[in-house]
Length: 112
Image 1: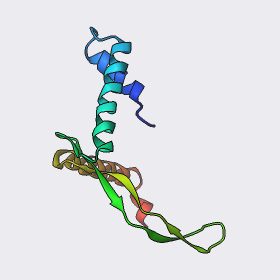
Image 2: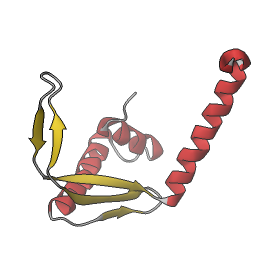
Image 3: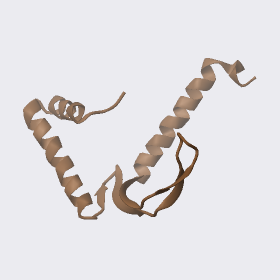
């Protein structure tokens, strides 16, 4: 299931009932507009305890056309990369470990 901007706005509204859904949507839109603006200018966007968004230049490279199997050149372009913060990475690793442990308990014969 995906998290949408509307879901984020609802979470803001539920955390503070004085903020209407419309105000929360406007707030979320403003935050994302500011992030997009900075990235469009080639700047880094660092969000504490979440991660860093950065524009990177991708070099041209050779690829394969899946329909024909023939080669093609993928042009160089700019892209956004994301690097999670240490606390986010720790949360992700903690969650992944918990899921692995839960799966192991479901069916111990799975590995046989």
